[in-house]
Amino acid sequence: MQRALAREEGTVYKDPGGRVRVCIVYPNTYSIAMSNLGFQMVYHLFNQVDWCVCERAFLPSRGEMGEFARTSTELFSYESQTPLKEFDIIAFSIPFEEDYANIPVVLALSKIPALSGEREEASPLIVCGGAAPSLNPEPIALLMDLFLIGDGEGMAQGFLEEFRRARERAASKAEVLRALDALEWTYVPGLYRYEYEGAWIKGVEREKGAKQRVKAAKRFDLDGFPVPQSFIRTPDTEFKGTYLIEVERGCPRGCRFCAAGFLYLPPRWRGYGAIKESVKKGMESTGKVGLVGTAVSEYPRIKDALAYGIESEGAMTLSSLRMDRLDAEFVRLLKQGGYKTVTLAPEAGTERMRAVVNKGMTDGEILESIRLISEAGFSKIKLYFLVGLPSETDEDALGIADLAKRIKALMKRGEMTLSVNPFIPKPCTPFQWHGFEMTEVIDRRLDIIKKGVSREHGVTVKALSSREAFIQAYISRADRRAGGLIMDAAKMGWKRAAARTEFMEEAVYTARERDSILPWDIIDHGVKKSYLWKEYRKGLEHGLTPPCDVGRCFRCGVCAPGAFG
View 1 (cartoon, one colour):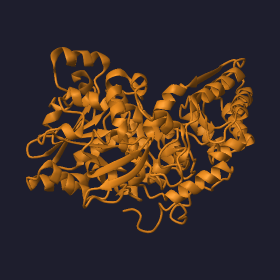
View 2 (tube, rainbow, N blue to C red):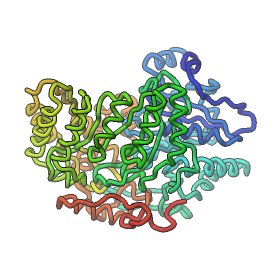
View 3 (spheres, rainbow, N blue to C red):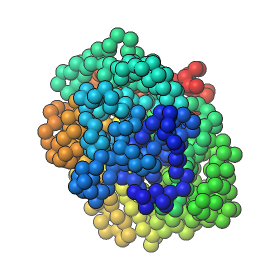
View 4 (cartoon, rainbow, N blue to C red):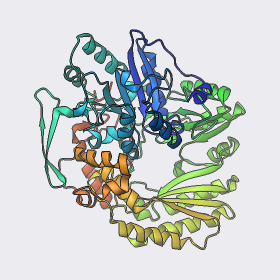
C-alpha cells in the first residue's frame, strides 16, 4: 500500500478534524479501481467540499488477504490508514454486478456486519452508487442503508449537506435515513417491503412518507462540473501510462440491448474548450491520452480532439468506435495517434438481427469500414458480437462466422479477435422483459461460430461461458432475495452458491409480462416504461428507430421540459 501511494500523483490529504469523513470503496483490486473514471470522479467531487474528507479503500489482493487474516488486521483507508468502521460514511462505487460478492468480504474485513438490519447504531452509514445499483439496486438492498441513484455530479454536494444537517441534530441513524430519503435521488431500501409469489414480485408496501419513485440524479449541462479524468495518476492501473478523459456521456443510438445507452440518456457532450485543456494536461502528465464515453466516436469534435493530441506529439486512443462514423480522415487520425487495435461492435452477423437490436448497419457499410481500416495500415481488429438475442436462430449465429470471414479477407494477414458473449437482458432497456436464452442453445451457437472460423488463419474467438452469463442474467434482474446468493457467493464463489438458489431458472429463462412488477420499477431514469415496451415490440418486428434529436424529440420522456437540473 505504501509503495502504491508513493507512486501516485494527485492524491488528496486533509486533516479530518471537524470534517465529515467518507471512505469511498471500490469492491475490487486497486489496479481495477483506479482505472475507473466514475470512482475517481466521486473521490474528486467529495473532496471538493471543504468540510468533507474523502479517502479510498479497495478489495485486498489475494496475497494481501492472507496477511489481513494472519494478523487479524481490519481493512483501512489508503490515505490515512484509518479503519473503515471509524468513518462517518462508507460509500461503495459499483459499476458491475460481478463485484457484488466482494461487498460482504470488504465489510467482514472491516468488522462490520454485512446485513443492514444487523448493524449497530454507531456503525458508519453504508451507502452505494454506480451504474449497476442505479440500474437495479434490489440485489444488494439488504446490504445497504442507502443508495445514491444517478450521476455523481447531480448529488454529491446535496447528499453531504443533508447528512451533515441531520447529524448536527443529533439524530438516530433511522432519523438520518428519513432525512436523506427526502432527496429525490436517494433510495432507502428499509422503507419498503416486498411481497413475492414464486419468482415474481406480487406487491410493494411503503412506509408512511416514503416516496413512490426515486428520480435518478442527472444534469443536462455537464459543463458546470469538472471533466472526469485521471485526477490521480498512478502506473499501477489496467491502463498504465494512459491519462483518461470522459468527453461525453450517453448515446443517441438506442441499441435495444444496451443498458448504458438508456441509463445515461440524454447524450451529453463536454465543451471542446474543457476537453482541449484536459488533453493538454494529460499530455503533460503521461504523453498518452485515452478519450472515453458511452459513445465516444459520436462526440461532435472528436477529430479536433484527436488532431490536437497528435499536434502535442502524444499518443491518442479511444474507448470505442462506431463503424458508420468512420471515414478516411478519422481513420488516418487514429493511425497517427498511435491507435493499435481497432475495436468495433457489429453485435450481430445478419442485417435482420442488427435491425432487431436497432443497429441498422448493412453488411456493405461494415465492410466499407473495414476497407478503410485496412488501407490505413491497421493489422489488428477486435469485433464484439452477441448470441442469444431475441428471435435469433442458428442461421444468425452462422451469419457471424460468415461476416467474420468476409472481414478477415479484407484484413488479409492481420489478426482478428471475435469477442462473442451471451446476450444478458438488462434493466431499463427495451429487452428487460425478455428471457435469457437456454444455455444449451447458447453453447450450440458458440460452437457454430467457432467451427465456422476454425480454418481462418489469425482469427481467435473468445467467449463468456453460458453458465457465467446465466448467473449474471439472474443478478442483473433479481429482487432483494438475491442477497442470500451474494452472501453465499462471498464464501464459496458464484457457481456453487447459484446451485442453492430457489426460483433461479424461472427468473432467468421466463419472459416478463408487460405489466409485471419489476424490481427496478422504483427507479425513474426519465425513460417511460411504455416507450421501452414499444421499442421491445418494434425490435421483434425488425423495426428501426432513429437516433435521439436531443432537446427536440420527446418520444422516450427523458428530454421532457423540466426533466433535469
